Length: 219
Image 1 (cartoon, rainbow, N blue to C red):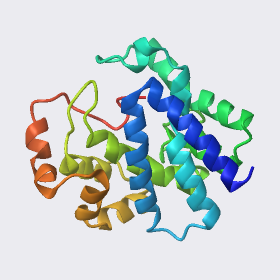
Image 2 (cartoon, rainbow, N blue to C red; image 1 turned 45 degrees about the vertical axis):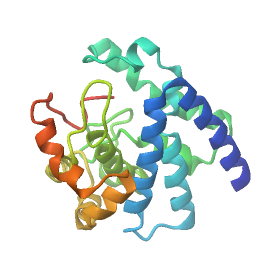
Image 3 (cartoon, one colour; image 1 turned 90 degrees about the horizontal axis):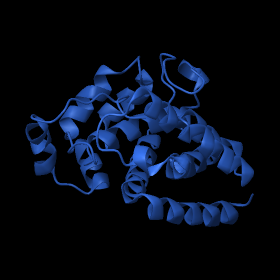
């Protein structure tokens, strides 16, 4: 598959994704910018940078197969609904393999819910068994999830997200990736997220009365 074919196929898939769920489409664009910025802190090869970009753009592709009643539910998912939600990983990989996307891209999609301590899914990979691009993406994904408004809660703010990511170093996240994230100027994240420093500072106060969040609370 050529670079032009990958780009063309990705654009078509993203149109389908945005048509199905606007919230997921917005998240996809933001988290890709965040992941690529974090990826700059590592000596990634050109192939790894390409995989990080397109894997981030397509990580939630499998949600095209998730029923609306579950995908757009505003309340807490039941165990059964969570199990259905988790199927988006395998569905996304199947779609990308059928379209003959390179392994490096669908591998990130396959591993983006794995955890450093082995408690993730679907394969329970641990530590360096998880591809570096997926480990980088996991931190960026949590940053965007916590600092964006969702159908089930408001943004929790950058400071809260930074604290959560730091506390999850060595359990959910690769400590090296967390260290790289913490070393980046918060203003960089503000710019990539399209917010000002005032919003970042007010985030935790605005979220103080909201429901608590853990990075793994939504599949």
